[in-house]
Image (cartoon, rainbow over all chains, first blue to last red; front, side, top):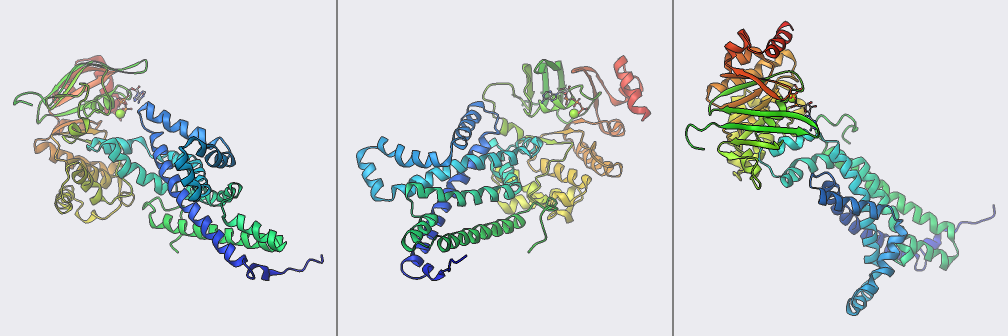
Length: 240
Length: 248
Ligand SMILES: Nc1ncnc2c1ncn2[C@@H]1O[C@H](COP(=O)(O)OP(=O)(O)OP(=O)(O)O)[C@@H](O)[C@H]1O
Ligand SMILES: [Mg+2]
């Protein structure tokens, strides 16, 4: 092998700034999409377990529709498909205010919301039905019972699979480069184009994703221990 | 509810689960202050019967009137009715992410909208009453079965119900813990609580119940005082049932 690494391309010229901007965009995109995904996931996951059929049916339609079409297609849908349906003025405004970012955020959030809702539904269904009965038998409404008992318990149980799904969301934010969101992968490609140093640029991107994912996993493990249900902590390691 | 009117009335009540006819033409009246023990073979419909009192199940024909309100009417306010009817389950059903104290304070604060301090005072008094003052901050997983069930009773009492329903409250307990729960129930009965208890604790039924209701295959086969029922059941099915449970 006669390739000589030239790591300095990562901090000379514009590279450092591009990487930093890419990192910030990835974080912003993922964080907003995550909030949307968790909100939709809780809503749809809970509705899929209620008795009232129309609500259950609506939530099921959302989940099956969005999780069974590739994320890339959703990116194109929100970016190329939706804006032409909007009034002219709103279109112009959108394209002056980072339409690709918002389209990418919606695509990520709605797609992963459908997937997270399945995780939350399985959490809810692992709680014995008698817990729900005990809470309504005291006079709580169904909504109160979900808010105070069912969801707090379910969310504590699903931290590990939810972590997994959150990492998927972060990694999938790279798909947004296809609609030219200048996120981390987009920026590493740009460095590669300008410097013709593919291996160095990709290594930098890889390491940043790795550090991000490991940090998230660590934080989620702390959250899991912090909120563990006493007596159900046997599967969780000792406090750090 | 006017004076003299029964606390619970079943009137020609029927219920099906799919094709299974689980309650057949039930007629039953339970006066305020009465302690009624419901017994019968497994699958005879005892749980379903008492779950119809607080609307966890609905009868499909006939009527159930609880504290003067028909619970089969359309638009009945079940949460409001349930604040007046406490229920204790076989499987305790304490909320695992809350301490004993928090379990008891929840409904008074969220349903009655009591201030925290007031709810806590009542909750501590109730824990004292079931003999668990020092367990206020324990989580359910760190309590024994008997202790959990006593907390569950305190939790139901926190809403100051007029009626208490018990569905086999001691069936999931080790023998040495059964009495601590029965003692709490006995004290409650002596204070004049209207109680409907599904239980096979015949000693409790003899000492505390005013009436025994014997069910089989979804029907109330006979009812009477514990003395009469245990000494000489009128029906053959009652005799068979007693011979089975008394020989064990
Ligand atoms: N949710 C349900 N769906 C369908 N069938 C049910 C349901 N709940 C109870 N059943 C059936 O209805 C019948 C009466 O059940 P129920 O639980 O009232 O009996 P039980 O007298 O309380 O019995 P056990 O002593 O075993 O608790 C049984 O055959 C039972 O299998
Ligand atoms: Mg039963």
